[in-house]
Length: 278
Ligand SMILES: Nc1ncnc2c1ncn2[C@@H]1O[C@H](COP(=O)(O)OP(=O)(O)OP(=O)(O)O)[C@@H](O)[C@H]1O
Image 1 (cartoon, rainbow, N blue to C red):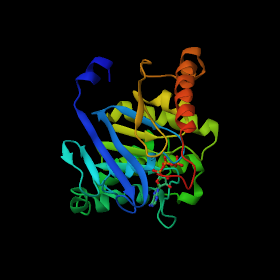
Image 2: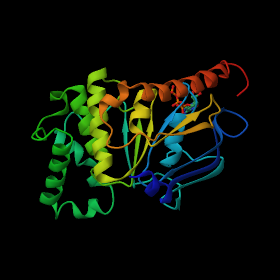
Image 3: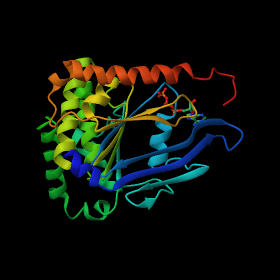
């Protein structure tokens, strides 16, 4: 999406003054406090920050898996009050079911999410074709009949992305999806997600520890403070799309990575030690 188009787009995710304490207000672990951020429709956002700053909590809040004590979250204009089904999610561990073939794993959300669940039995062939097309798109054409344990780690993560996207969610939430992969496979997968986003135009929130990954993939990077997490920097990434992987080896790319790295080092310096007041 061109920058001008993007600034005109409406917000798809809106998080406003959100506070969440695990274990209840005033008692447990204050994970995020007065967290405010928004992601535009079709935008690719990345969230980075020191370990334990509340990045996964942000994912759980946005998808309705946890409910904040304070503040307001809307996705696609609707207040989040419980688990959402317009979201696709992928985590570091692909967690494909070992007893189901890859194609059946990918089709799993269709058995659960409305309106597909009601349509699946009658329109099986159409849905199988859709799953096979997704596999093709991520370079796994013909691997549908294989079991997950017959695939490499990188292939499993490709299948995992297909499963997250098969019900055509408006929002894709990625929590360290490439963290367990070697550097070459990770770069390959960046290309896969870059192309999927370009083609399907969904909104993405990517949580990552990898600053190169964030700068390469995102339109905007949000840097969070140490716990209790809040956004301390919002950095627009203006590199033209489509972005070739060679971009990541240029000086201007590395300048942005260093800028973010310094900001996180500052945030880490503020990290409270275990046992100190939350
Ligand atoms: N279910 C829970 N119960 C109690 N505390 C929790 C729970 N989940 C997370 N926390 C705490 O909340 C804080 C934020 O956790 P979260 O997992 O969101 O951080 P993170 O930024 O994703 O961490 P990392 O970068 O290490 O993956 C941490 O101090 C964590 O220990």
